Image (tube, rainbow, N blue to C red; front, side, top):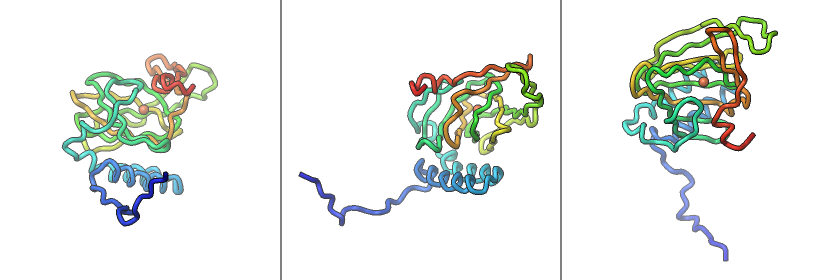
Length: 205
Ligand SMILES: [Fe+2]
């Protein structure tokens, strides 16, 4: 027997608190949809910051989300994921250097607590020798809560390090990471191509 949901009890719209994860995700969808039309990275950056601000300001932010298998850290939580947008809350241990890497897709970091040294690189060699890459620093900043940074291909190489305990970041990614990514050793101008741990362990490859 079919169950018929009485229409009078069904509300077409539900009120959603402005600082809910859902309202943040809805705002992100709008911002990202616009970026896919105009490819204006500066507008995307500003829009991501505005969309995530209510979440960043939530007193219970650190209790939200579900555990995620991350690539470099132990404490990462999914706040939202729909296959096109991935929103995670990540804790970076103090002084742990995350090596220079690329993504194959844009990635934005919004600092929620603590402080983060963030470095963006560009590749300055001719990419003719496998395993060899020379990187040049194009930005090196210390980020504090409420600040955003973003890397967009082809300039999507970055490294970072938390400078204080309890450094938390909301990471926004506009799709799936590339299955093969480059991890750079800036001290000897080499790189390795690796499949991220999270993707390997997902069983999708
Ligand atoms: Fe990254």
